Image (cartoon, rainbow, N blue to C red):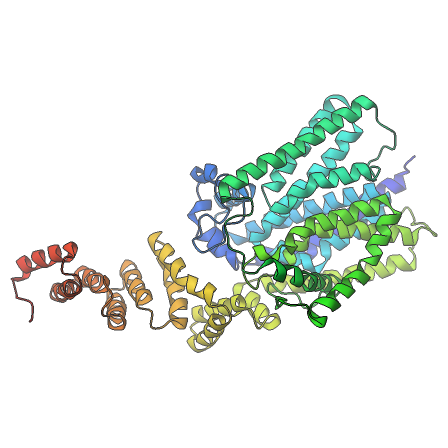
Length: 589
């Protein structure tokens, strides 16, 4: 029988963890929209209107962004963004508040799962605190665009707990739990891709003797049949998800061309794993960007040594999984939800490691830590009340968790604004072109063109393909009427490509739209001077001159266009009309 003291401990442990989590991450409420938030949320009409909801289910998540990869399918995440935008608009504090709320909910749900596995409130609290307070979670909680990880984790945990309740219940209550579990699983998969693996975890749970179940009684044949029938519903959802994903992306994995081949991917995975493990064991130099090199050939330092380290580090979880069904479940959780992050060929070049990919796997690592704590404390047994003096292990874990909480609080600060974020990125990953380029943009906004030029040229040298895309993105902004964003993108492109006539011309059109006619003419003339034989530029300059009232200059530019394209009908029409208005002046011979 559970004593009142034990019951109070069962709730005191998660309450302390949640309170600490709120204290650590409360500062995020004062953070800005950063990095992709601006492009994906603030400047993306695709997520601003409910009329686009049907498209959320038939198009990629980045459908509204021209230069983004189109290999992600996350309609529930899009619904979340639309709901937040409809309620909170551009108030960043509210967006950060909903992200923190999701993290707290996930923390409580992880506690409930851990408590089922170890049956010890204090041990479950220690494992949950590791999940909630580890510094690798700072990226996911602090960055609004990472809400997809928070959503997917929430629905996965709800689906798991509902599945366990369904297995322990009967009648209508059991059916209701199965429905909630299946619907939550679908929502998780539609929030982020790793959640699709959840049914495999259910199967492993059954095969391992149901370690997270509160009932140890054998179920009847009829019950096992109904449970297996319900289990089939998860795989039906997975099939339906795969079909919708294929329709939206053109294929299950999308149509993005991988930046590396299979052999390079396989050779690089060991060093990627070692990097992640380094962040778990020594989380002091975390960043949104990391310099992890691709491995194109077998080498001692790049491949063999990481493999050896992985074999050594895998010994403990393998040993634990052999000895305990609960440990097998926790290890399987971490492996299943971590595995998609190792398909590095699906990511843009240089984007091999991101701490947000550890968010859901950290729940399994927290469960495993709870089991380790319970096992290490079993000779003396944990006291039923946290208020009583604990043993040395308890104090040591408390000190470790406090240190992690302090590091997390410091780590979140790098996500407060774009300057701090990209400065940290350049500091930790000096060879990352995205970090250098974005920091250059921040200096450009601040008016420091010398530092901006240095960083943007470095970015262009490190990753020319990405920064060439600024021209395309600027054109997309211009066509959508987002002239401020177009001007910024063109400013970046012209730092690295100062002799690009098209960029100068498009900047001229942008200035015209924003009410700066003199600058518009200057940029258009510069474009013509750089590319005098380029069809269309004289005609475009003529349009700008005509719009600013310089009809004589416009007629000369229309005639210059006709010298390149004698049959260009729009130029012929404009010359005739201007001749009538100004008086016919024969073109110079």
